[in-house]
Length: 164
Image 1: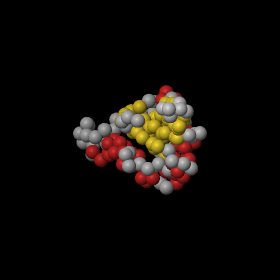
Image 2: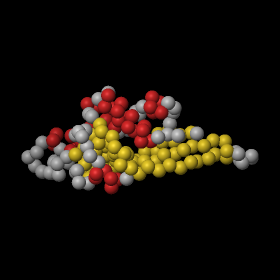
Image 3: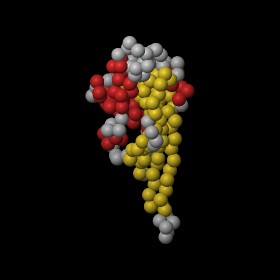
Image 4: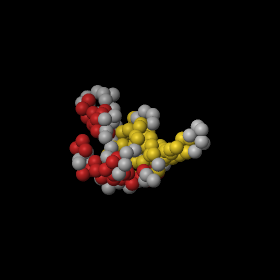
């Protein structure tokens, strides 16, 4: 059975080894969003947090015999990609006299979209050893000045389907 935490730890390690997008990444699995607040970080990398893990089994039955013809284990979870930033930093151009290129859109939000967004390829076969169907389960949500550490970035809801 798929170990979702192990997968994301290994995926984050690969991103670090390849210096994906010129960034560094630090993985943690607080499992619930309230626990993100107590994660102790060692570096100022992009923080990858795994939360809201759920799974279910779907069975397909033969309509004539009633026998099971296939099964899927479906995992749903949220993945946060967050960077700490000062509260007073512009998102774009709210406070005049500060260059737009110093705002969070150009330093955090847009770079993370380019690095981890729609065209992001995961190393599923290399890590898991078999094909897993992956889909975003809903929209990616912008995260702004989140929790005590003033995290900024994205929360993406994923779905992995594993045929068993």
